Amino acid sequence: MSACKDREQDPRIEGIASSIRVVPNFPKPGIMFQDITTLLLDPKAFKNTVDLFVERYTGKDITVVAGIEARGFIFGPPIALAIGAKFIPLRKPRKLPGEVISEEYVLEYGTDCLQMHIGAVHPGDRALVVDDLIATGGTLCAAIKLLERAGAEVVECACVIELPELKGRERLNGKPLYILVESR
Amino acid sequence: MASEDGKDHRLARISSSIRVIPDFPKPGIMFQDITTLLLDHKAFRDTIDIFVERYREKNISVVAGIEARGFIFGPPIALAIGAKFVPMRKPKKLPGEVISEEYALEYGTDKMEMHVGAVQPGDRALVIDDLIATGGTLCAAVRLLERVGADVVECACVIELPELKGREKLGHRPVFVLVKG
Image (cartoon, rainbow over all chains, first blue to last red; front, side):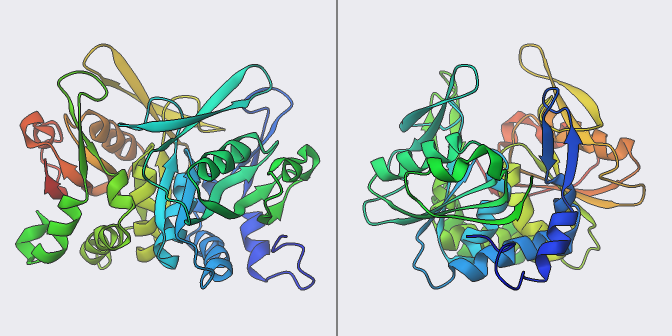
């Protein structure tokens, strides 16, 4: 599901898409990096981005917005504040103080780990997972698993950008994905 | 301090929503954990509102948030006051051209980076982080902004640890906090 594919594309999408900068060969040769920092420099585009998510999730009884470190921390909190939900940071290892649960996930070479605080989420919580971009879906998948292990229902994953060729959508444990901009 | 404006009723809840974790990240440190504030929607909402009320009429054009917890508080403020949000990041995270500022740690140094072109001369800037301790990180952020010609109006944090004298490190520059730890 995506705002950019709806039969009549929301008029705000074009401004959002054009505010995103592509930086070639970052972090390594061959990768076309989707840089959202230029979106954040455009107050109207940033506001429209948040508004599109808020409009979708208002009235859906979302109790938790989980943002993935670090760019999910930029988009998640404004959404959480607007819809009256808790915000939960999902972090790289050893950043969260106190008791955490961990979920390992696969990288191109090796593995990484995502952590969530114990007690942040309760059974019955209805959760949204937010990140700036979905590529392979590995990080989002780890996020979904953490929330489900704590008993939450993951309602949807929401990202600004999707790289559809990397098929991340298929790796979300059957959870729906909502995006604003596709990048091919 | 925010309480001088008579906002005591909101501050009490904000303050009590912050959890202190002993011996993190190492023995002897009482870590001020704001994640519990983020779980309390009213406390989080009030935190942002107090900052927005302070800055909305001050023609702020840039809110610079320090990675990573400054990314949580900065953007809602930027959105509410119509300013750009600029992430200040650890090395090698920002793609494209950056400028760097080194700063001292207890042992060794670290670096903070900002995108070239994000901030222009004459921009009026706010620097946001969750907490001010020694002031080293805030100082690096302020220097980056001043190097590109911005006017740093104020540094704003949720929490201050006054014994670590961060205000002194920032010289004459104003610092606004909600809670003292």
